[in-house]
Length: 130
Image (tube, rainbow, N blue to C red):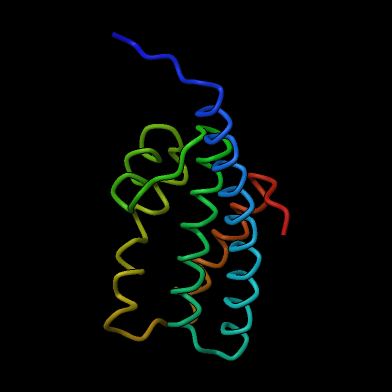
């Protein structure tokens, strides 16, 4: 048996998605600014962490715009990306280990640059306004 959503439920869902969209846009701008500041100070490990967090926020934003939902964790994000956003999934699948490495090792500039370039690619490909 199906239950039809009430107008109140639809409005609440719209408001939540609108608030989430604004929050993700704000976080994108703040994280990009922070990541670039840290990168320019030559702390590539911390910059890599911030660029990856930025990638996650941008991917959540893209998923919200295209699918109307946001993933609750990395596993759900990976499943959605694998199914609907192949290019983004391939990047994360290949480089997620680098994100995990930031907890225990120092990241060189070249590896940080790979993540930074992907951030720039996502911004351009999905017309994310910064």
